[in-house]
Image (cartoon, rainbow, N blue to C red):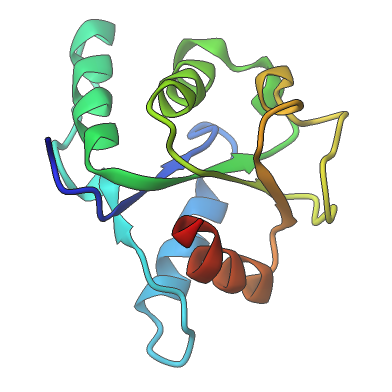
Length: 142
């Protein structure tokens, strides 16, 4: 079994890429105490890859994952091809999940949260640096 030390970030790559990039920028800033090893840095996926190849690579990334962050944007709950599949995979592997509300709602946002996460033991936080920092530090230790 692979050593699980990575953080997997699940998000709508068409709309919410800027939030993913901001998380990476926070991670690189030495004045901010956000520490995670990005699972997306392994097994690079090419834009022309087939769905089967993409899912195989995502599954490999997930095997190295100790925590998943789901960025909850305006359309996240409607994404099934990859986002829901990634969430289902994380749940089946008992990987702790932090749902980060991009609209900064603190707690579950039933209007945006994917139904699959609504009744699961998931930490729901606002997209704020301190909330993300604290959650990364403590949620993965549970």
